[in-house]
Length: 110
Length: 113
Image (tube, rainbow over all chains, first blue to last red; front, side, top):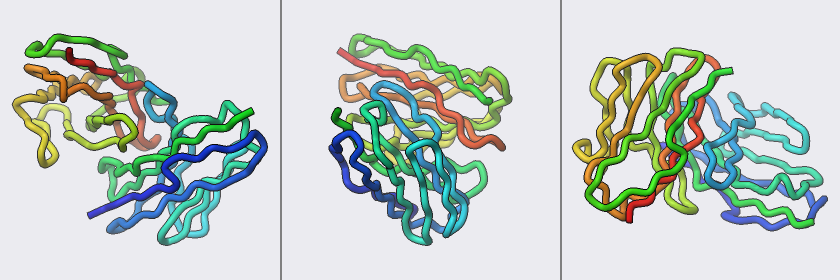
């Protein structure tokens, strides 16, 4: 059974305090690993897709990396507007539903 | 980019009544639609998969007679929660896959009182 585990469940950072979120996964044939941002009462907002171990992608203060067992979302010098829940999900086959982790609730305090 | 419009964004209904949630693909043909449910501080859990013109397939533990899914066209998929109860209160989200990735609706907050 495909599984995604995210840690920590919640993270509180001071503005400018860099940190990393973890996503561990077990999947029978990874087609892609996805990171999303979700604000309260909203649908997930796409951030990154990673396809193979060693791949890295960046967007503003965010950088996602992938190994064969886990992915990290690095947040550099976060700002209060980065506060949200960050979701990790895996795709095991073409056009199959994503399997999501429970997310990490990030709070950035000014 | 691909957009899925989901309505309503929130709804309050009385126990025993039915509620319909719509997801429309605005600029692409959504052959497949995934329906998820999300409880507070929990993950998005897949409820069912619908394909245009065929019956939906439901995940284990999801009552197909309670959660009616219709995908009669390539641009519209609907989820009807029948005889709603307070335990059905949740956040419902639709998602459609494609060459552009996965597009999500904005979600529907259902509260059953």
